Length: 113
Length: 115
Image 1 (cartoon, each protein chain N blue to C red):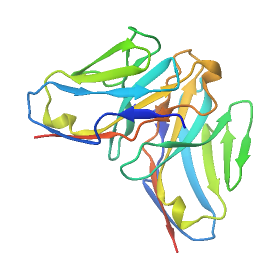
Image 2 (cartoon, rainbow over the protein chains, first blue to last red; image 1 turned 30 degrees about the vertical axis):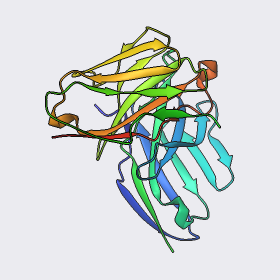
Image 3 (cartoon, each protein chain N blue to C red; image 1 turned 120 degrees about the horizontal axis):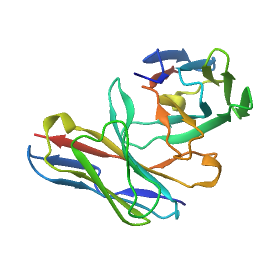
Image 4 (cartoon, rainbow over the protein chains, first blue to last red; image 1 turned 30 degrees about the horizontal axis):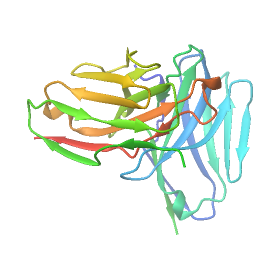
């Protein structure tokens, strides 16, 4: 049973426009969420995080929104750039002390020049 | 610059071989993890360790074992490699402090092909 879901396997966006990547989760115990970006043949790199005590976190062009009642988070990239083309994973963790994150299946973003 | 280093980028092994994947981190992190990445399945946790000589099964431990004799090194062992273990293997580490605002630091991955 997939606890963290990214229902869009791929997304194409024009350069300069907004990219919105979505993530849904089922476990109400999740209280910390991360987004990672992964280029081919490289390991994922951390992008942005959000704690369940917040509903928004912003870092430059990247903003993550959390809707706890809907168990939904989204990553907004504005403006999108060709270098943003990558696979994006959301990940969630419950405060169980194991520091174990559950990852989604990923969304491949392609930003068209 | 902090690093998680995986010893091999690409490996080709034969069915039935015993395979060792090595991972070393230089950040003095307590926690280390092994994931595999497969298309359409995302990253799935195989094993993790929160201390030297300690290990916990993840979501898909079958066919794998691990070893953590030193804090900086976490090895993944495929006891008898099978073709369904062909995958990208990712090692990661994290510190205990507040789950880490940055979560994990990942290595570059090892692409294993079992023939």
